[in-house]
Every structure is written in structure tokens, then in C-alpha cells.
Amino acid sequence: MNTLRLLAVISLVSVFSSCGGGGEDKPNGPITPANVSVTSVSLSKAEAELVIGNTLQLTATVNPSNATDKNVTWNSSNATVATVTPTGLVTAKAEGATSITASCGGKSSTCKLTVKKPAVAVTSVELDKTEITLVSEETYTLNATVKPDNATDKTVTWTSSKPDIAKVDNNGKVTSVKEGKATITAKAGEKSASCIVTVISKTAAPLTFTATSVPVTISLTKANTNYPCEYRINDEDWKNYSGGVKLTTTGHKVSFRARSEYTGRIGKFVITGSGRVEASGNIMTLLKKEGDLTSVPDNAFARLFEDCTALTTAPELPATTLGKGCYKYMFSGCKNLKTAPKELPAKTLVLKDSCYKYMFRNCTALTTAPKLPATALWDHCYYGMFYGCKSLKIAPELPAKALGQACYFGMFYNCTNLTTAPELPATEAQYACYKRMFEGCKSLKTAPKELPAKTSGCCFERMFYGCTALTTAPKLPATEVGGASYSAMFYGCTALTTAPELPATKLWDRCYESMFEGCTALTTAPKELPATALRDRCYEFMFRNCKSLKRAPELPATTLAEFCYFCMFYNCSNLNYIKCLAIDKSASSCTYDWVCGVAASGTFVKKSSNSWGRGTSAIPEGWTVQNIN
Image 1: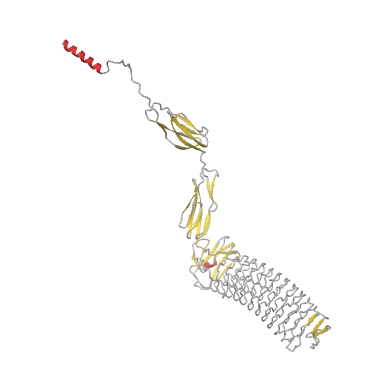
Image 2 (image 1 turned 180 degrees about the vertical axis):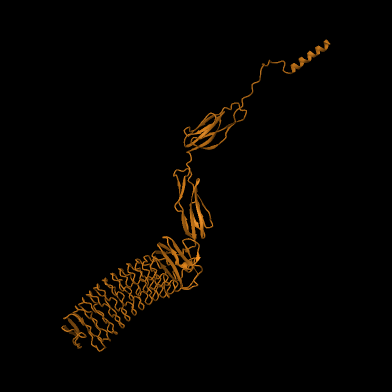
């Protein structure tokens, strides 16, 4: 037993020795762990925005998680913009930028912070237009005003309720697409404003009468019962026309157009009642509702508004190709019409007989004529166009160089306030082309400087008849004159003092008949009437009643024609000099009463070989005779 106990002790000692026994002695107590370094610091946000006064809690993560020292320090690069607490709570102080840095164990991470002022909300949005009307493919840019001026976000977004009718881009530019209505909305913040866009077909504004005073009833008497007319009141739906339309409210309107294309004469509008109306829109819609025609059929608008005394404004007439008589008598008798179309743009009126004939006849309130740019005319095209327009003061320019017969006949007849005539550059006249053009224009002081046209029959007949204020006549360079071409041209021009020279050597019957008759202030006649081959009645009544004329033009013709000097100087009570070289005076009544009523004494120069005799049809009694070889 003792032996066994001894062996056990020896074994324990051996075990103790193999486990560290022997050698140096080891200290007693716990073992101290090794130091763990920080490898990185990260923040919950790398960038952030705050409004002044707001806070943000940043969180820092230190790696590794068993780092020995995980104590984080916080810093703001600009504490006036934002501050940060030891726990990472950031407070925004002022507008600007700063960096919030979290540091630990030599490592750091930064959050870039932007501080802004508190947002200012949009309070209203306004548009410059709340309603607009566009034709197809037209554009209009709307302007949006966002309030207040210091709103934080003034960005405007644009939308269209029907982009297939009207679309809008990011800048408010509206583009019409097709006929209809759409609403354009501008929105900023929570506020918005809208504009209603009405799109009409291109050039399709219908002929419209708008009441400027009431009541008025507007009716259309159709030239053809089959004319497909429709109408609408204000902007209501279109209806087939069946009778007069009464407007009882100022500003209300009625529009007319063709339901389907038409090529005949429209008829005549009749306006009754004590009110007044203005006409506007495209007259061509009466032929085709789209109004896209440029050509007018023969007589289409003839007499359309004749005697519409309630009409004050005419619609525009855009056609560039005209038919015969298409506008004749169109506004005749519209006594209250003040505003004509700005222009009648047709450039050539060839083969368009009477297209503007009596168009504005007796429009006594009309003050301004439309522009007339046509350069080629046809028969009767401007015949009586402004006849009796007593308020018209300025004539339009008339650039035409190719004329038609009677093209300007009576164009400004009795325009008693017209003061200046336009230049007339044509170089070849046609029959009666200027006949009676300014007759009765009692205020006309200035005639064209020259009438260069080669004459034709009656071309200048009565052109300035009764122009009692006319002081200067135009130059008349024609060397060949037609029948009655200057007949009564200046008849009754009582302010005219000097006659133009008349160089024509080839005459025709009645060519100068009564040319200066009644020009009571005329003191200077042409120096000579050089033609030597005379025609019947060529100078008949030429200077009759020219009571201030003292010296007659020289008369070199040796053979006279029937009635050629008939009453030529009748009642020229101051005339005291005549030189006439006539030898053959056998033609019937060639000098009948030609010096009746001249001065009691004067000088008569004649060929010595010719015997005249004395009297009102020969040499005046009491005159001295001077013979020449």
C-alpha cells in the first residue's frame, strides 16, 4: 500500500515538471490583451442639405468594431453656417456651405453640408392672355408671371388639355394644330393659370357684322335661291340662313359664310334699324367657308352692300385675281362708310371689265381710299369708283402704265374735298380713259405734273371740268390728238392762270373744243397752236369767256375747217391781240362769232393777201389791222 502511494507522488511530480515546472518563475495574475487600431471612419451621409434652423443627426461608424479607442470627435469647417455637437447633431445656422467631419484614431470622414434659406411658396401665377384666337399653324408665346418675386422655385411647367388642337412647349410657345379649342395651363408650385385657345381654319374668319349701336337687323337677299348660305350669332353653332338676324346688344355680331363652294353672284345685304355695324373678316368665305380662294368670279360681289347706310367699316378684300364686274357698286350709297379696305391687291385687271365700277359711289363719309397697286388696267375698271365721295381728301397712287377704255372715267367725280391728284404715268391713252376723272373736284389745287400719254378719242375730255381751285395745268406733250381728246378739259377752272403749251400738229374733230372755256382768270394762252391742217370744230369755244386773256395764241393755219374757230374767243372781254394767217375761210361757220365780245380796241395781224372784213365773225370793229407777207 505504501509502495503504491509513493509511485503516485512521483507521477504527479513528473507531470508538474512537464507543464512548466523548472526554469524561471512566472508571475501570478490575468494576461493583458494587445492594442487594436482604428482602420476607418464612415458617416451616415456624405452630402446633405438643411434649411436654416433645422437639425440633422449624423452617425459615425468606427472600424473595426473592436478598435481599442472608438471615441469620435466632431468638427464643422464653418461654424457660422452650421454647428455640430459631440454626439453628431448638426444645427443649420446661416445660408452657405460647410463640412462636418467625424475623427477617430487618426481616421476621419466628412459630410458636405449646404444650408439654404427657408423655402418661399408660390402664391399666384398670372398669364398675359386668358383667351387667344389663332389660325391653323400660327404661334403665340404666353408670358407667365409667378408671385411673389422671391419665391424659392419659380419654375413654370406648361401643359395643353388638347395637344392635337394646340400644343405648348417648355417656354410657353403655343402652336395651333387644327380647328377647335384647348386650354393651356401654366403651373408653378401649387398654383396655376390657364388660357383658352381657339383655333380657326387658316384665313377662314367669316364675314362678320358687329353692332356698334343698336338695334340693327341684317338680311341677305340672295341673287340665286340656291346659294348655300349659313350664319351664326356671336360664336354659336352655324345654322342654315333663312331670314333676317336682329342684333339688340352692342358688341353682338352675326357671321355669314357659304356652306359649300359657290361661283355665282351672292346677292345684296340689307341693314335696317337705327344702329350701326362694322364689317370684318374674309369676304371670300361667302364663296367658300375655308376662305382660301384668291380669285373672284364675274359679278360675285356686285352690289353686295349697296345702300347699307348703317355700315361704317368695310371688310378686307384679299383677292388677287378678279372677274368682270366683281366689285361693281359694292358699297355704292353707303353714306356712313368711313373705312375702306386698306388695299385692293390685284396687280393686273386685264380682261376684268368694270371690276371696281362705282364701287364707293356716294360714300360721302369716306376719308381714305384703298391702295390700288394694279399696273395693267382694262375697260371701265375704275369707272366712277369714288364718284361723289365728298369727304375724300387724298387720292391713292395710280401706277398703271397700261390702260383700258374709260378705265378712269369719272373716278373722282364730285370729290369736292380732294386737294391733290396722283401722277398718271401711262404713255398711251385709250378711248375716254381719263374722261371726267376729276370733274367737280372744287378743292383740287394740284394736278399731275404731266400727262405724257399719246392721246386717243375723248381721253382727257372734261378731266378737270369745274375744278375751281386748280391753279396749274399739267404738261401736255402729245403731238397728235384724237377726236374730242381735250374737249372741255379745263372748263370752268376759274383759278387757272396759265395754259400749257399744245404742240400737237395732227388734230382730229373737236380735239380742243371748249378746252379753257370759262377759265376767267386765264391770262396766258399757249404761244401757238401749230397745226396747219385743221379738223371740224377743232378749236370751237376753246377760250370762250376767258375774260382775263389779252393775247391769243398764234394761228398759222392757212386753210380753215368747218366750225374750226367757232366762237373761239367769244366774250374774251380783255383780248386785244390776234395773229391769224388764214387765207381760205370758205369752210362753213369756220369763224362764226369767234371774236364776239372781245376788247373794243386791239391789233389783228393777218396775211396782206387776204381780205377779212369786219365784225364778230371777222376782224373786230375798232381794231388795228397789221398786214404781213
